[in-house]
Length: 215
Image (cartoon, rainbow, N blue to C red; front, side, top):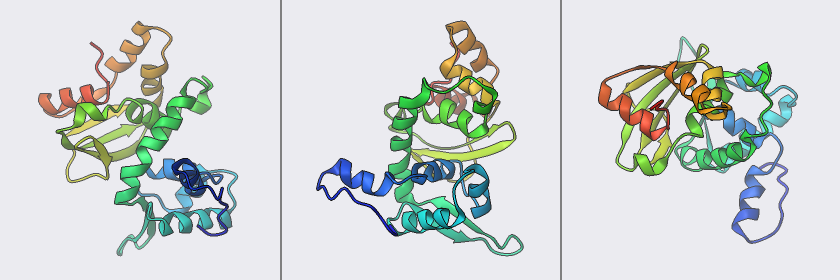
């Protein structure tokens, strides 16, 4: 990566931190888990990052193969950034592990009730790869007006592949409460407010794989 700092240690943790340990890098990757994003989208969601630093981080992530830059054709004609195939394979487990570590530090204020926090708390942290070993399906999750699309392919999260088998409508508040509610009754109540659109089989599978069942 440009102007990359290094620990100069030949161990997998140090090598990983050489790529992911720079300030803002993981937050950029967090944003791209939510789908294709324009440069302006990333700037808006990362207040405080200098525009030249964002450009540098994106170039670096492209160079190591975690991020793709795509030019959309007219009439849209805009540049969007996405996780690459390798990014989808490597990034979600890292983000999930760190978000799990920090989940109980989340402050219960309105500032936490963002669609992305809802997606991280309700979907990513609930994903159980072992329950999805034979699953191939795409999903669409609408959280407070923001759309997240992704797929599960044999135990791994991937970019969306075709039409969604299930669409979920939810609020960030309910998805966060489903994980952090102070009582079982509160958590179950939040889960029951989620709205699933799809055939019974795929809905049941999604609930099981993402631990979204209120039973």
